[in-house]
Image (tube, rainbow, N blue to C red):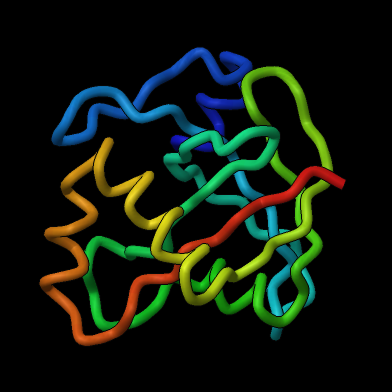
Amino acid sequence: MHVFFYRALRGRVVDRASNGFMPLLLLTTIGRVSGRPRTVPLGHVDDGDDLVIIGSNGGLDAAPAWTTNLRSRPEAEVQLGGRTFPVRAVFPEGVERERLWNLVASRYPFFQGYQKRTRRRLAVVRLCRV
């Protein structure tokens, strides 16, 4: 339903997060097994021209399917408001990963709670416009 309403309203919806409003985007990946398009609504933070998303899955031990899809095929599509454009996913490591994690977690502290609930390291993903 979220995807339907996001598209119908051209992105003029917000998701109430525990620390205020987090802007949403629609991410469409290609399923690594099915080969079919899969679209999910995700909160994001801008970092220059790029978008940063977190693969939290609400702190569950299993990573969200979209992260697995992006690791297999990093080319994807984003709808941001009424605009749709191609992106390439990058999974930063080291200092860059920590910088992006801190950027997102400082604005939306509920991600820190998600990280505490699981043993896996939450994926930080940079979506670079192609």
